Image (cartoon, rainbow, N blue to C red; front, side):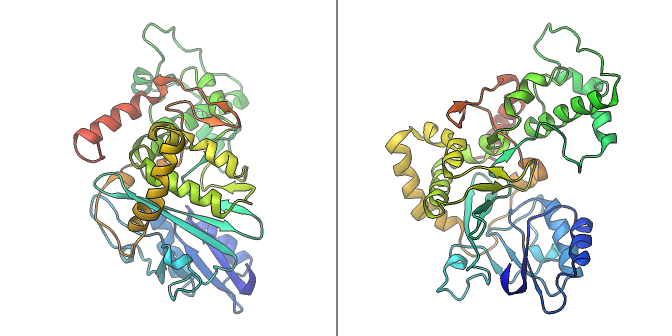
Length: 366
């Protein structure tokens, strides 16, 4: 960024970020580090941010609204984060005293909605010069090949024989023949391991880890909304979510790529593709003008309430899943690039059951 600013955007793994920043001598010689945690709930992110702030005391932390933790609602200061401000709508207003210092270069839009006993929040950023949209969990794209950061040993283990407990719950439909033995070649076993690993992250308990190719191929290389967010968050705050997406596409119509915090990035996509990924919101709102009308109302009322100052109430939905909230959706066909992503209901079985249990116990809104 100009004026010597660096924005460190919602990351995991403090040691890698520290090595990168010190290698480039950032934060020294008059340069300023600006640090922005985005999601309101994941402990892994907060656990990384505290050490980062201690290593770079000149960094100024900005946090998403309605921060909370579970099972005990602790202030962000407990994690070593002492925020200078919050990424609210007011902070995106250049005339406000609460405006973020990088507003000329990077704009932002907060989303916050109570989906149960605790809020879900996320902040989308727009880097104007590069026309890039940055998100945390809102959309993802699963690569066909394992990222380099995934260790080969972990891939080979995931591609080996399935543990009995896993096989019992993820061995295909009743009466299915036993899965084929794991490949002997290391490259093939690692490829199988990546397919299994990705599906487990996406669905917790996918339908058939013994034969993951069909489910994996239906998702790989497509930008979609995570099944966890689709089922447990956006599906319970449809009007607010659609209003947020509409504002992003209306106010930042020139973005041509999206950088999420998980899986593959950057993704070549613009407003049309983002709307397509979230098209299930319109379908479930009743579609057409009805869905848009609800979104318009949400964007002027519901979201504004959700992004107000303060830490919000305690709760446990987000922290219950932690980093696993960064995944892909196919609980109903979602139009992507003019087509529909097919889903296997067996892959969604665990999330459907979890959603029902959380609603019964009052963790999720009914």
